[in-house]
Image 1: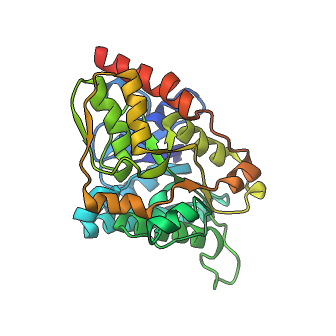
Image 2 (image 1 turned 45 degrees about the horizontal axis):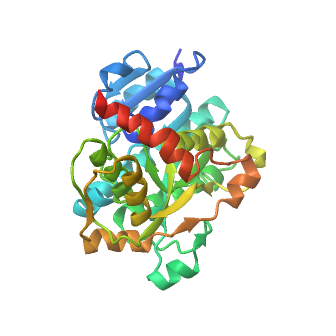
Length: 337
């Protein structure tokens, strides 16, 4: 008999590590984690960990013969900046990896007669605003606004949202009897900032990079102009959003894809908050026009009214709490050790 588990792909990423630690606190959850690398030693015992590639079809076949996936948190992805250097690889990982897992979830949903929950973190990269004037005018974008991404990562995320919606609503629509569909739920996250894991190549990482550099006494050169603005969220709120969306009754959800956000900051405002905590920090600005161009195409804020209405989303960490209660104390302690 196959073992019922919660599958987490991309387990060692910023979201993955925080999510595993949260889910492992409940002894009711049997976790199966998958990543190209090993879990950190301090997380031994949290899950059954498989070191492997989401694109390895033989590995995936082996896993589905041993496990029944009750819920899938599909976090594995090649992020925005890296994706621009290797767009074909980004497509393989982000789209083909997701498609294969959606197919597995759909087949398992039918086999067991109950939907597999498929939780997918999407991104503000799914948006593509044409210029700064439009960005200033349409400050809080809705889920269906400006879905014209300018990066491979954004294209991948938007397409995977559509794939998930297809498998949720229209898979095997020509069959003689309606199959049991999977239950696809996605969140469009703003830039995420974690106190406990290092930035991993995202275009929004200038925020956490400033903090981590300052805490180590290292100089930092920000790759966007001081006035550039995007929305951000502290990692604990991101984990709460994933878990709360996963636990929401399906009948209350009016969408497959939801915006969530917390606060919007310019790069200069982040610098000022860092300097409050680390007065000797050396931070300057030298724009990388290509990376800044990506930031300029992302919205300044997100309209998350649908998430608030449908499943009670509300962030705990505003700007003050995020920096003064979560980020700065924990990052300071990390490097003092």
